[in-house]
Amino acid sequence: MKQLLSLAIPFSLFTVLIALAIPAAGQNHENELLSMYFAEDELVESATRAPKPMSQVAENVTIITAEEIQRMNAHSVAEVLNRVSGVFVGFNGRDFNSSTALHIEESDFTHVLVLIDGLRWNFAAGGMAVTDSIPVEIISRIEVIKGPGSSTWGSSLGGVVNIITKKTGSSTRPTGVITGSYGEANSQQYSGTVAGKVGKAGYFMAVGSQNSDGLMGGRYYDRENIYAKVSLDLPHATTLTLTTGYSEPELRFFDAYEYNWRVEGKDRNFWTTTSLDSSLSEDISLNVSVFRKEQKYIRHNYTLPDKTFWFESYEDNWTNGIFSSVNGHFGSHLLVLGGEFERSESKDETGERQYDEAWGIFINDTIKMGNFSLIPGLRYDHLSLTDDMTSPSLGLTWQMTENSLLRALVSSGFRRPYITDATPGLDPEEVISYQIGFETSVLSFCMLKTTLFEHKLKDTWVWDWTASQNSNGPDAKRYGYEVEIATTSFHDFSAQSSFSYVYTDYYGEMENDDQYSAKFTLLYDNPELFSAELFGNYTWWNTNNISSSGDNGSMICDLNLSRQFWLTEQTALDLFATCHNLFDGRHYWHSLYENPHRWVEAGLRFYF
Image (cartoon, rainbow, N blue to C red):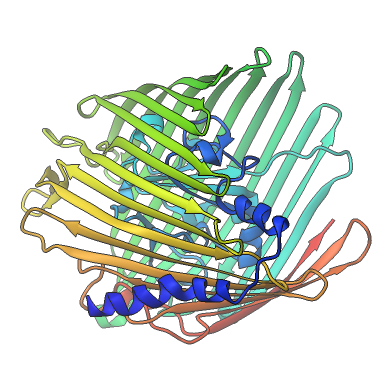
């Protein structure tokens, strides 16, 4: 507890002290503050599957934009999510891209639902979301919902990460970005995007390549990816959109001579969607989407030093499905009615094929009543591998003053058994979640956001080593808080910091434990000179998430620098450099995945 207080107090006050040093600058700063968290012109799609203002969203939501991702010089979705308060990223090496596990408010990594434009990215067989295969250059924004989103999305006990891709172009002149970077250990990334419009057809295309010899422990990484989106304007305010993507990461997880063990892997991901969006009237819109996703992963285990192959795990996953929704504005109501069906198939190294089918229907409403918004939701899921589930939720927002907002939410959620989890008698894990949040810019130079939460779980899954399968265990409870502070810009300087704390009561044989993280960003951003960003993250993993050989003891800091040069009115060049792990800290959950020492890379972006 002493260590916790020694971190919590300075980090909770860190940005306040910086903010107090920045004087108020009038009404333009208040407008800037309002845009930080709940501006009326900032729409959130993931809460109810219909765009609506942030001030009418009861969930604890964080949004990361393409501009922020670019400023980070991020190579992976995990690097981006590592910036988000309440998200704990378990890096398997923190190398130049690597496999990771996502935890939201100390949830299990299979509790987190990851989506690409609403398409479920989690493996159909086991439920884990492997995000290193998702290229960051296709991302327009990421919306993170912390806490269950089951009343809208179904199985999502811990939270939702919805990755929204970039739109097709709107001008006949093609626009895009070409990026290249090079760093230590022959770490390279090259990508290109282009967007435009030809007649009634818009397009967006992206290609990319990443590879590295490995910064630590004989690891390496190699990925090629391609993505395309085409939209066609049809009569009667209707748009047809087709997307397709392919990504193939290949990596060595570790080369551990002390254990006489090497593990290598390859993933292949193909996905395609066809969507029809139509405005049936001025206030009613229809969306219909069909999709197919193919994911294959192969893991090879070798005995060292003779490199004898001794084990292979292999799995093919296919998922086909359809989704449809109707959104309507009726007076003070924003009503969403939707349904979806998906069928998944999995084949492992034995050749055995297994199947799973699920369908769900949901309805939610956002009722605007003066300064209040009431948000009820309800979803029913039919699951072929376990019992059916019903997930209600009820949210409330209150715009207390022009500069202050209160949020409250009660919701239920679940994690369904996926194909490899499905054993006779295994019930879904369930949760009842309570959240309350407060956001204010009453101080004209900073924004404060706080959230309290409690997640009560029942029928938790416990691994039975004797039977080699999951079984339902005792109840558990996770509760804690998040504090976020952000300042306005003053002479091009700004700052953000956050502190997240989670305590878990296991109600069983496992020992209760806590977990917390402190994060900060210091930014200098002058378009006429240069941009400099220092980001730091200290995470204390609890004993269930770190082994005895892990190291919990350091803050990991990255320094990003960039300078932009305008070549013509329509073209520009960015030069950028990043020093990773600036102070050479050690932080890893297991010695097999020791993080790299300080390393540097540099590159350029050409805009046209």
